[in-house]
Image (cartoon, rainbow, N blue to C red; front, side):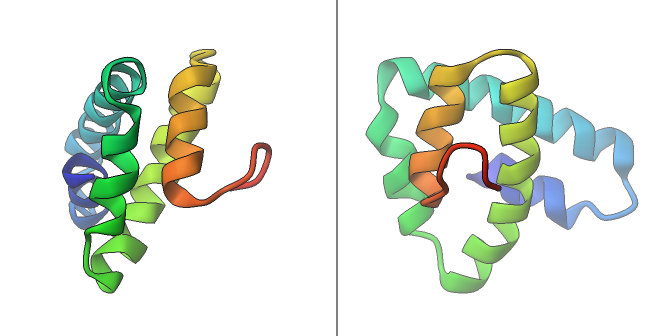
Length: 88
């Protein structure tokens, strides 16, 4: 969640923002295999305002996972965010 939150807070720092999204996608893919429930717990544990900001970053990560064909990672992230497949 931290990388997704930071990606949104970077603002005009597009290069670093893209790097944060890429790193978050890798982390989500690993967590999807090794500890899928931790992502949902981490997102749920964020303060409301931080969840709103992280959600925007998570949508970018979700798009990256979908583009890479990582359905397992995308599904775990959708569950964590409470989003149905095909809807962001």
